[in-house]
Image 1 (spheres, rainbow over the protein chains, first blue to last red):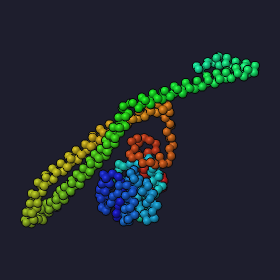
Image 2: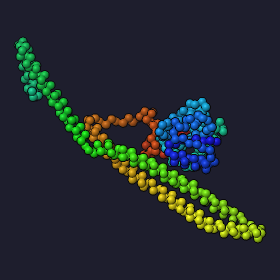
Image 3: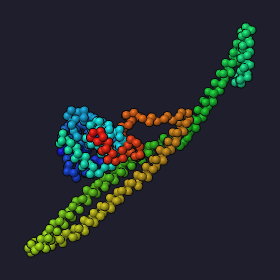
Image 4: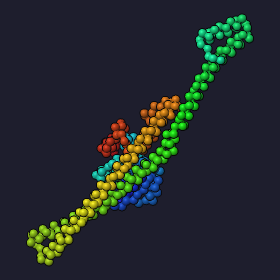
Length: 125
Length: 244
């Protein structure tokens, strides 16, 4: 299970990577916005995407839409971890096909909970 | 020509009518010219006043050294200050995370050794231990105790450093306050500019369009806004209402 963590702040990438490591996901890689994330995803081998919303270059919501529009990536599970808390944004992300939405600041428990739920649904589907 | 009051206007008009009735074309032309001139004079006067006011306002605005200083110095300075906030908080977070990485193995190794000694001690109490094994347990305890002290000291030191690393809050808080006061000043000057231009501040579009509504804004400072969720539970409720 290889996870791509996309956030423009290196501290947040580090925090998420550390939390994922504690959850047993040791194989992670990073990108700092949608533009750098897309080539990594297209190169293949990524099983799960964790992305921020508000980033320079290509934003997380546009990355999500690009992933869903790409036939090789359309089924990739995407978890959004963001400080964006407007209802319209959450609805937009849901309609764009996000698999989970976590608001910052968050806890290790929330991260585990959402990742577990995403895999439960994938297994059930 | 000075502008005419209403009784003067009426007089000129009567003269004009009289001249037209008596078919005196020359006289009628003169009165008509008087009327037109009176009206133009009012208009010129008004435009002149407005032009002078605008000119003075713009002059005053241009020469306000505070505003020039703000544009040339304070704005670039503010960018630098905000970058400082990003760098300082980033450094503090890395610093703290690094200290955690150094501290966790220390407490783990203390626990592991204690567990090992506890198991051996239990066997000793149950009289299940030979003399040689007891000697080795004894030397293990002997080396463990000073190790506890050294590692506890190291943990203490790391925790103190973590406490120190939180000093970024004070530093960045001060800088952000300065930025807030500059923003207030800029806001006041913009309001003045809007007044000078004689325009009313447009009512902000309350509905907004979709692009604005989903535009990334970063952390919400005011969580009391109607369209903002306050915590993960509200996110989950909203998503489950959408069939998630």
